[in-house]
Length: 281
Image: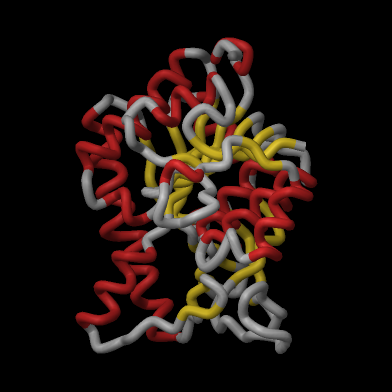
């Protein structure tokens, strides 16, 4: 078990799934409390959030049915408008409100602001779980740069930057980006000690319906075996693939963790594998 003070001066990046933002009290008691403890130990924190469930719900209210391929959303122009409304609007405000409950000084925006996340449109690519042919995901971005200097400045004056997972380019284009991808790239560029992918799933499960099948630790080779065998499937595939890519870019540990009990994130930070799945080099 490691002390949080061992990471003083380093960055932790915490990615919050959109499904968690709807319950502000629960988000505050889990993610907010953990972030408060991290700040108290001298750790710099950046939060990244998604908004998938909110976007799906709003889209359906507007008559748009989501198209999901290999666990990833296809973003046509209408879907991008919905993503902007949910990520920069509803979810951003809900996360800010939750952080206020525990006095975490969260400053919420998106990667488009001030060019924090510079991106280009992704070309068609083969996607794991979506067959052999390249898939065009539409107005989805690949990150080319992260303005770490701006994030450092915000942290240096006491703020916790919170980024909704949109990026843009100097031509005024806006792109939807998978929130796990944003969190991973931000963590890599900040040379973060830890990346937490927080959702309503308590880790990587051998049986997705049985929490007791959680795998406490996985190496890259073991994770790829689990994907090949089908044990890791659906939306968990891009999560795990992103975790493995980030290890290769220098992040020391990536943790997939839930929020039940509320101390899960804090306990996982102190003892990797105790409450989630830790990916280690």
